[in-house]
Image (cartoon, rainbow, N blue to C red; front, side, top):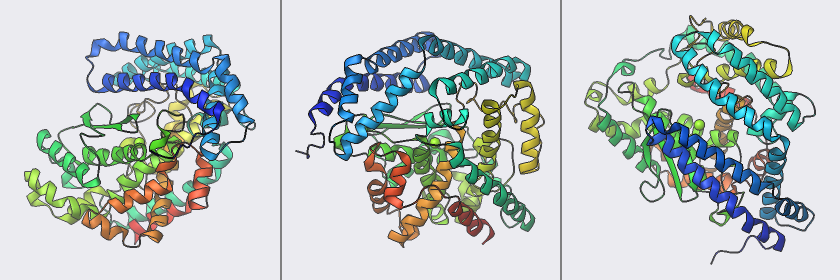
Length: 500
Ligand code: MG
């Protein structure tokens, strides 16, 4: 029998009540996963209604006066670190649940679904005007949300905190300033020197979907994903990871029929997300501290596997035989081709297809615009021009239409403002983790070359995964690594890798 980590009587009562909220979340994950993976299109109305009703139910369980009282009572008692984690997570969830009046929640959910439909049509027809009034509405609601949540310095801080506990503009400002100052000259030098490829013939090679599925499954097996026992690989329009619990963490990818690195690196990326959830301390099951702590920490795990491992020369060598066995066109290419193909650097318009060097500049642009939207008086009609000017300044290219400009991402249409910066935090943190792991496992890259991933998974479990949400993100980093997010590591990594 595992050691009992929750000892306090009040905490035990809290956890008994919380099980209902957990069960609703579990059901919602299954419904959400099914919607993306299996559901026929027309199921959408009933599914979103079911999801909405379940959210209302979970919300009412969370705010039940007896439950809120118990959480407050526990906060004043002597607790261990696990129990303190439970109280912290619940106090935060209760605060957020209480902040928004029901009419605001209803309005937000209505605007979200209508704005998303308008965005999809606007993007398809490349007509920003169709989305413009909805974007104005989203900006207005984001500002309102910030006011309801409260903030010390900037309204934007209230929104950042929703996605990354404790994150403030004042944390991000020096990070993005540094990235802006350093990345642009690095990118210019890479392009000038011309040693890093800007394109590769493998981008055009068409693959057979069934063969590619085999490749993906073999790679997942190599990485150590417990296919069939605790995980699955399915297909969805946008790759994602979902956890139903510690022992059922599923991932998806998509097959476009060409440019196989997209599906393969998506699988490696999602594996990183999944491994985090799979390696949370099992004793946290059913409690509020089971599950990854924040989007930024989560993305650091996916980016670690995707960029640090997946885009390494050693990994290219490791998977080469699998590729050669399953993809006939591979006979024309070498291990070095795989490496070069995975590490093309090319200023381009689409964020999700961006390389390691330009990716953070795409986020920088969104961060700047979000700050303007929430902190200042900016109207939707001005945003496309601002977007294009900024991308031209950062990458030297100017979008010719809205699809490759402001209409490319779904986030704002979803009402998600303040989320983008977590992508950069994760990408930066992945390179920090690389430095730390190299100190503890000096033959890290040799292990990658040999497909010896167990010690790497174990290291990540000990440093990050096992803690689930018991410590807030900043504290977790301090405890495990003795420092918070520091862009220096990323800049050094990029210089070393791409400028030699
Ligand atoms: Mg991700």
